[in-house]
Length: 284
Image 1 (cartoon, rainbow, N blue to C red):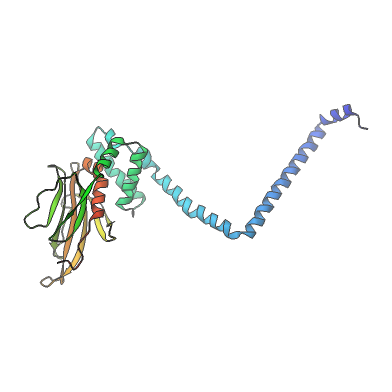
Image 2: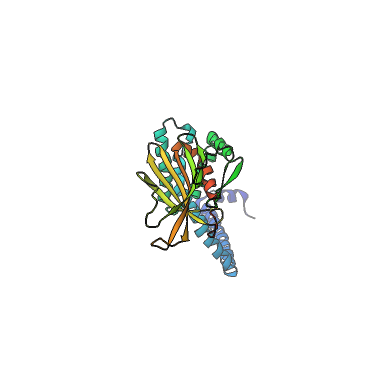
């Protein structure tokens, strides 16, 4: 029988420590080998499962993480509109917000930019701005223009102006400085209609209406904290007397507003534009 005192003495020697470490290392190698064998077997048994996971991680999650990383500087620098004390700084930041987003995603629509901005308003708890948005989204009514046949929805707490004698449209909102109107007009293709005048076009993009038709959205900086936010739709009408053999009927939602008004009512204006329904092309 082995002497117990001798065995304890042996266990304290370097030799015994080496044997113990060797056994533990050998056991770890065996466990890792079993795991690798199981993974290899499962991969060859269900290759589509691993391929799908790889594609998902590479495409969907990868693109999502890339987008988050690119937009992080905009998220970090975002300040609630009600926290600005200097209107000029606020105006510059609003323009910079839109430009920065378009620099990252040149093909982005205004709906995407608006949605991203609204998400930031919620995340940053911009309660005053969110309350203004909620008030403007409470009740809506419909205006129909009988001369051109288009319709549009607008907030019921907005007071309509008087319709002009020619019946081409109406003012949806006018407080003496900020004005939102909607109208139709006939345009000779040889003499294009210019919305820009002396302003600077920040962007011009396609705009999808709720009925699926495409319009054009313009964002024009007029200077002195004034913005033109415009959406228009063109219909070609066959007609004699025009060199091109047709003329255009242009239907316009036109907002000439301060940058403060635009930020407070951006979602309302987008909803008005989305609700716009041009007439059928055979409208009489």
